[in-house]
Length: 331
Image (cartoon, rainbow, N blue to C red; front, side, top):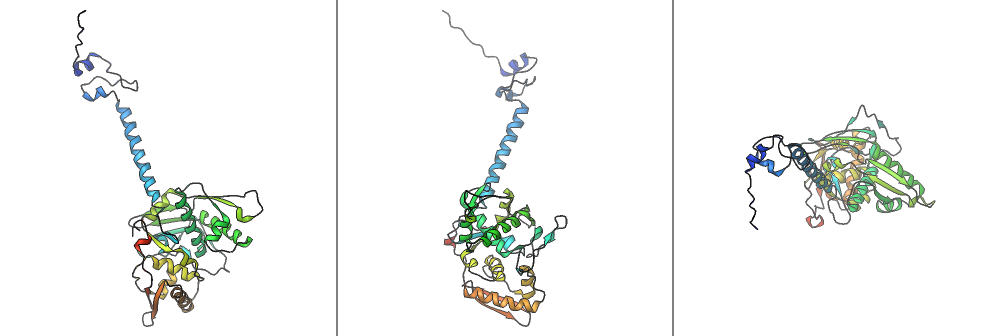
């Protein structure tokens, strides 16, 4: 039997031989042309879909990587705080006896912060105890490795932040979680921005027990919160929790972001701490007490107030130890 020879027609002639054009894999006609890419049998519409799909995948990957910035791996006892928060008066120093005010969403309040940070906030006033809870929530999300539907038990939270195990503390925790999920923050710096909630959503579910300590909370964070963690600082959480003064906590967070702190005036410290103390002279007395407390816990080595210019000079006793931080701080 004679061998049958297959004569392959040139691609150009094959395309032109079909007046309707060749079929793509999706079933669409590619049209009549001499484009050699037609032999791939992928129509332009499909190419657009593939390109868009690839771009979305890359964006999703970038988003996942950015979310990981929320989870810097720190040594035990350290917590990550965004510099924009630590260097602002978002978490105020306020008398607990004074009720919290609520800032209208239509008229957000400008929050005092260092130069280069533009911040506005609406919702219930936030205070230093609220920051303790927030830092622990962020740690829990870091250990869970995600930011959606992350569970934690009330008693475990209170144990970590060193609150009493009683009904009053559980009620206080519930209120603070509500405050953190109710407020809205807008931040703009040269390298980052954020507009949303510090905690997007909180759900509470009581287990089969009358014990409020067994209450399970589930937390959701805004994905964009990772933008704030593009510049963050590791703070000594155990040391912070040992401080009794809210002003000492505010100064501790702020100075943790500076290796060699620049001297601030007493009035500037009053502004940056969000203190509601009416007079500067009264605040100066509170500031001295807070600075002494920071020396006592080993955060500051020394401090003094320049009487001539009313500048507060401080010397850090503890410098950030690179061996305690497994990842670069990004500062």
